[in-house]
Image (tube, rainbow, N blue to C red; front, side, top):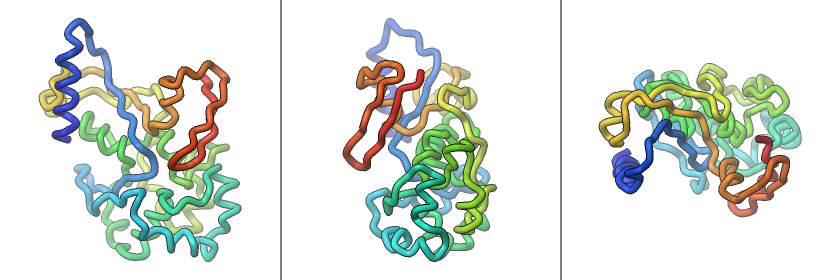
Length: 218
C-alpha cells in the first residue's frame, strides 16, 4: 500500500486546481487471497503467472466438464483462472478455506483497506470462471462441483455502486479527504474501453493476456 500511497500523493500534488470527489480502484483480474475477519492475508496471493494451477485445470474434468464451465461462466480454460487457485488451495491447504472469512480479489483487497468493507466487484467475479453470467451471481453448480463454499465471497457490487467511504487511516496515508465515496470499478480491461474511446454499443476485442470481447453498454 505504501507505493500506492506515494503514487496517489504525487498525482494529487499535480491536481492543485481539482477537487477530488471520489475514488475507484481497477486492477488486473483473477488474482486474490483468502483473508481473516480483519482482512489479513492467510496465504500469499497466487500470481496469474504461477504455473502451479496448470495441473488443476488439466484435471478439472474429474469435478465438472470444461465445456459446462465455459457455458455457465463464459470464461475459457486458462490456468490462471481464480477457480483453479481455489481448488489448488482446497486440495493443498484445506484448513485455510475453513479458517477464511472471505476471498477478496485484488481490487477488493484495496477497497477493504480504503473503507473497511468486504465486497466483490462483479467485474472481477466475471474473470473467476465461477460467475453464472446469466444469473450474475456465483454459480451454485460450479461451487458445489468443486467444493468451494459460497460464504467465501462477500456481497457483489456493480460498477458505479458506492462501496463505502474513505476511512481516516487510509485518507491520512493517501493524502485525500476523509469520507469521500469509494466507488466500485474492478477489472481493468473493462474500464479500458473508456480510455480507448469506445462509443456506446461499440464492440471492442482485447487481445493479449487473454481474449475478451466486450461491448460498452453505458
